[in-house]
Image (cartoon, rainbow, N blue to C red):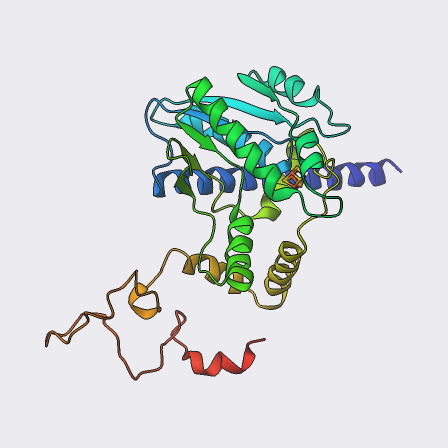
Length: 306
Ligand code: SF4
């Protein structure tokens, strides 16, 4: 009997050890990917005051948590202030974020603005409210950034948000456009950064479970999730399962754009293109089939496409 108990205890200890090892690996990966994105796009500089927008969802909690870790290790000094916009949605648990932020000792500001009533008043019943809601939220957050003296505004969008937006813009907006990791705000006064740009959503989900963030549900406003975004999300999850590497390659392609091999006349001067008589290293091999990165000819894969 004692031996059985001893075996069970040993198995449990081994399991706990394995889970701790996996959790630690995830934390290291997240820190590495966020640090990499910050470096690649020069997102945070010496003396910055970074305003981290906290919605109460898993991604913004994770973003704040990882930035706090990185700040301890960074060779530069920067400040962090967390900001939540309480939009006065029904049943919003207003005490959750202040309690959490006080507990972890992060300076914060809660901005109370009843955008919920405005949106309900202006948008007819049954119509989607997200575009007005996010426009109002954006304007308020820019003002708050000014008031707090924030030099950067950090948002919790991750790799999957970037990919979904890319396909949404292409499929429904006929544009090759996504969410940039760093951009100038539309009022021209702020720099918005997305330090989770290289991070997968599944990793953020797992991290939120491990850290037990006090998540606030995101459906309090009663708005339906955008149907088109839902479709794209399902498409990407399906690709991830059935075609390993495809989503990863699509994401990498966003950083490897060749304007001379697309069709945007504003990006590349096709009209003025003349033969110079000089060979271009790695230039177009006009009539050849493009080898894909694995060195296997793409023609072989064409029949596999959906
Ligand atoms: S889901 Fe609700 S809170 Fe979020 S943007 Fe849409 S209307 Fe606003």
